Length: 428
Ligand code: HOZ
Image (cartoon, rainbow, N blue to C red; front, side, top):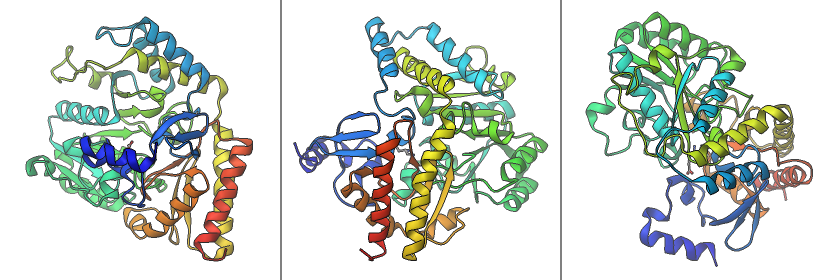
């Protein structure tokens, strides 16, 4: 079976042949790989080619693919039933684990995706404050809910349609978009419109325009000014939750949001999302309160089994130091190779996630990201793919590693980076 044949067949009945736009490879060119299976650090496509996977399902597979303990938990649960549409103890275990790990979350509701989590958090914030305006930041992505798909990152940015069609003007007009990392712009906006703002939502580390770290004081200012103006602060930790520490990035920096969105790692690879925070706010959710939110598959037992076992392993093994060291090894080689080739390269790293930009740094804003050379990234992507390393097929996504990326695997990925970067400069 060929990737190209499957792609043609997929296009017959699936728009563009994919169920999420970035997968179509349009920003990098070429044929998407159709994955047959994955194990540890590797993906295997339908042609039998093996790739070291640095996408890791866009973040969730922090333990690598098909981790035996996670698989065992899922298989066991499958034997007991896959969906009940009724409460389970597993949901309580998950909620307890989240609330224990992230102190700002006093109560949490489980949903099926990060999109749902962000959409619901926004609805809750509007109800709680009785206000309509949402503030988001350029290049941050919070799923594809209508209010949040304005100047968004990820696929929306990859395909240059950050303002999607199909969203009513009235809805888009209640979302204000400000530059990420610009405290003055935020302070001035809040000075003018603060009393109308229901919530400010932010990825505390932007992970959907590559990886862009918050400048010192940025998140602290969001916290202070939202409190001053009676607006809620929502951290979208769908990517960062449990990726950088056992808990949220918020715990590393000591900024406590009112609401937090989670997803990815807490589902261990299964479709999951969660939003939680202050008890007085969360209590406004139906049936206790007037804010309706529901889902047949919310808290699904299979997803809970995968997520709980993933969290258990992360808590037990505390692999975060090792993950950071692995990523640093890879990136050091990347910087060194670019340096000796005289290639402009900026790498933003936080623990086991990173953004790779082909331009002079620093890359701290959306404009800096847009100034990076997307065509050079596409070339880099293919040079790496040819060497059996799978990176995100877009310059506006993150690079991840898992606990399975060690020893030989890391050596091979590192060697591939060295070769690919040198070839980019035309020296080999
Ligand atoms: N929004 C995801 C990355 N940040 C892409 C999901 C996918 O294409 O699978």
